[in-house]
Amino acid sequence: MTWLPRSLRSRITAAVVLLVTVVVALAGLVIVARIDHRDRTDVDRQLAARVEKGDQDADKLRDQGDHPSGDGDDSDDYGGLLAGSQSLVRLVSGGKVIAQHGETPTAPLPVPTRDGYRTIDTDGQTWRSLTRSLSTTGERLEVLQDIDPIERRLADNTAIVAAVTLLAALATAGGVWLLTRIILQPLERLRTGALAISADTAGPQLPAVTRPQEVADLSHALNSMLDQLRVSMDSTRRFTADAGHELRTPLTSLGVTLETLQRNPDLPAPQRARALEAMSAEHRRITALLTGLQTLARGDAHALPERTPVVLSELLDEAVAHAAHRHPTTTYRLTANSPATVDGWPVGLRLAVDNLLDNAALHGRPEGTVDVRLTQDSGTVRITVGDDGPGIPADQQQSMKARFTRGTRTRSPGSGLGLALVDQQAHLHHGTLRLGTAPTGGLEATLSLPSTPEEEPRERTAPD
Image (cartoon, rainbow, N blue to C red; front, side):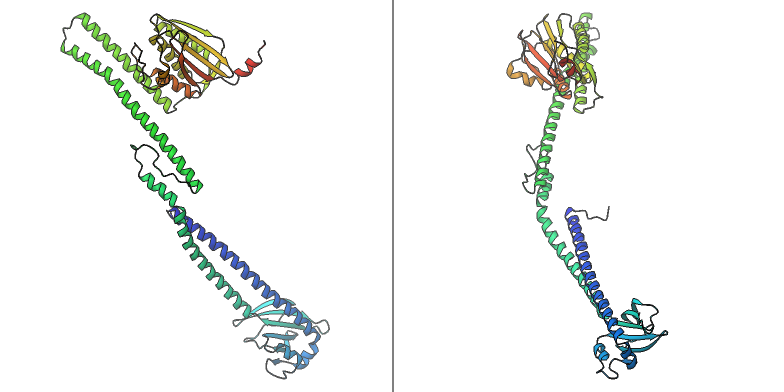
């Protein structure tokens, strides 16, 4: 709606002025209508009373004949009653006025043809008339009252209402315009603070408003949003910098090896084979790093398929078999006490399990053992993977879930994304990842996930 004012202050003022104008105008018109109705009702009541008197004095009115106000004998009772009262009495017979007394109209008045009330407009003058048939003679008696004073009073009262409405609208506009300036000051402070926001400045940028409550809630919500955006931006910056650093090292090594091969075309076969193997290793490292980054980015963006039931015992059987093939010198021992089922994404859960199994093999004892357990209780499914390596100090275990973080005791290469990927999948499945110390002294990772509702009743109703 382009016709609406652009500023909130103008819109509030216009809305309140419109409301006040309508209310005052309607109230005034109702009062004016009530006053006018009362005046006209009083006139009708007086006409009815005069008709009764005219019925009693019809013979006397007929004898007096047609005497306008001020003419004839004013000592006459009927003339004395009507003189100067802006009223008129007429006696009609056979469609003609045979006698009248009272106020002389400025223009001839039509002769009544039926009984009852009527309003007559003639030559700028308005009359209210009541006609009644006389039961004795068949004549009609008509009593009329000039109601121009009532019409003028109606016009004057309407003009007064219009003037009061206009003054009320002007006073309301001025008052609301000033009040909204005071009321909207907290919003103006928020706007000023928003213009001064800088992505490089820490802490809330918007002023803390305490009154009114709605603006205070808005200020709190916006500051919370800014904090979350700043944390997300800082995390993205660190993530980008770490990713660039992690990619730079293998790419640099790959470039140096390629340059060496180009400059030495006659390099002996053993040295060339070692160089090609080193290039293959760096290529695998870059591919694994990019795959991990892509998975993390998809998880951060919640670009996920619909959830489906996943049988963890079957997933673990397959994952452990493939891990044993990838790490033939490591012994995997799987213990699954429950065919637990969770709602989730099979690819994401398989990625988390694979990373836990690979992490245990790479950082455990050479030719060591990895224990994998699947347990379930109280609606929670737990996948526990423990190795017999040097482990991680307790004060460093929580930080190992951060991206591109590697332990101080690690002896094997890696990108530092394995546990970060597992932790992300845990949160996406409404679960948790806890790092601790295994009974054998190595790292023990426990992935806890909520089981499907169907699993709980089946366990509770199982026989003892």
